Length: 114
Length: 111
Image (tube, rainbow over all chains, first blue to last red; front, side):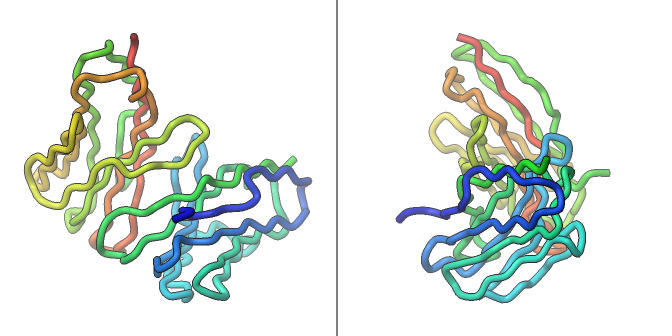
């Protein structure tokens, strides 16, 4: 099992540019989560999907953020336009079931907006 | 009040000692509790889960849960330098069913 795969590992972009982060969950997992981690705020849940359907996006900070899951093996988190305060590590995680066990995290994408 | 609170540390213990990490949560309806370990520059890794009051042991790790006090702890026996990491407490909210993380406690085990 390759685990949760995220790309890119690092992204440096200029303010105002569009950024797309990608995630491939563990095969068979039907829940997918996007988290953001900063020193000040820790791990924050942005949005999660169940069977490719967005269930709760209340953590998405602004309309500049959007997420999609077109199929069971792929999800994207897009920021347009990006701002310096978006700089953080973005993690994708997946789980087999919402009510059982913890989540498996990907390696994360370190985003720097200059 | 934060939903999940942890002391940020750093907590420094000598090698071989017991490290005690604590966490409190605000949602009384929470049913599932987890401890994750995160090495610097790495992703969180699940090390313990606990669902009922009392103790749960797994090797050198013991998780303790007291729902009446809304308190979760993690004990690490015979601490090793390789245990040096940030330990994140996570609680599945009874209201939203979402996994909410504390900001983590940095543990430093001194050789």
